[in-house]
Image (cartoon, rainbow, N blue to C red):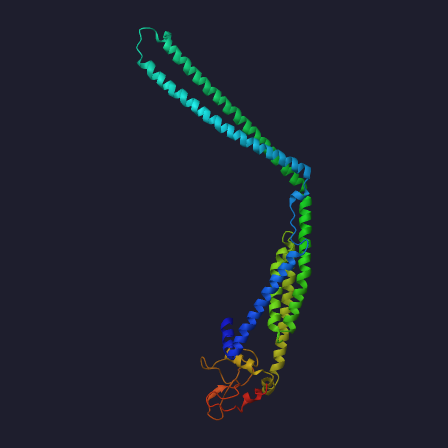
Length: 363
C-alpha cells in the first residue's frame, strides 16, 4: 500500500522531477556507502579496537613451553611406536601364517604316512615336529613383541593425556584473569566505538529534525543512513551483555525514549492539524504548496486535513472533503468539465481557473 501511494505521488511529478528524485536517492546511497567504507577504515585502524585477547597470554610461558615440548616429544614417540607396532603385527601375521601352513602340511603328511616303525620314533617325524615347534616359538615371540609395543603405546597415550590435563589446569587457573581482561577489552572497544558513533547519531537526529526541507537533504539523508549503519553494525554488536541485562536494559531505555518522542511528535501533529482546521479554506489553500496538494489528491488524501478522501462514487473523488470541507473538485467555468480544484488550468479546454484553484497559483 505504501509503495502504491509513493508510486502514485511519483507519477504526479514532472518527468525531470522524477529523474531528479531517483538521482537524489542514488546520491544518498552512494554517499552513505562511501561514508561507511571510510568509517570502517578509520575504526579498523584505531589502536586497541581490533586487539585480540587469548587465554595463553595469561599462562606461565615457561610452563606452556615445557608442556608443548613434552607433548611434541610424546607425539613423535607415539608415531614411532605406532609404526613399530604395525611392523610387529605384520611379522606376527606372517609367523602365524607360516605355522598354520606348515601344521596343515604336517597333519596331512602324518595322516597318510605308512611306516612299519612307530611314527613317534620315526626320525623324519621328529624332525618335522621340531620345525613346527620352532615356528610356534617364532609366533609366540612376535606376539610378545606386539604386546610390548601395545603397552608402550598405551603408556605414551596416558602420558599425553596427563600433559593435556596439566595444560587444562593451567588454563583453569588463568580463566579468571582472562575473563576480566576480555570484559575490559569489550568495554574499551565499545567505549571507542561509542565515542565515534554517538556524535554521528546526534548529528543525524538534528539533520532529520531540521534539514528535511533543505536543498541539500539528499546528502544529509546519506549521512543519516551512514549513522544508522554505524549504530546497528559498528556499535550494537559490541554492546557488553553481562548475561543480557545490559542489552535488554539499553533496549528498554532506547524504546522508551523513542516512544516518548513519537508520542510527543504525534501530539504536536494533532494540535497543528486542529489549529489548521480552524482556519478558513482560503487560508488553508494559500498555505498549501501546489505540487504537494496535487500529489496528495492523486494519492487519495485530502491536502487540507490529510485524511482519506471519501468517495461517493467508487474511483471518483468527491467534490468536498467530508472531514474539513475543503473543495477538492469543481467545474471549469468555461466548459463545465469536472476537474481537480487545485488545477491552474482546465485539462479539457486549457482556460485558466478562476475558482478556488486560482488562490494557489501564486504559491
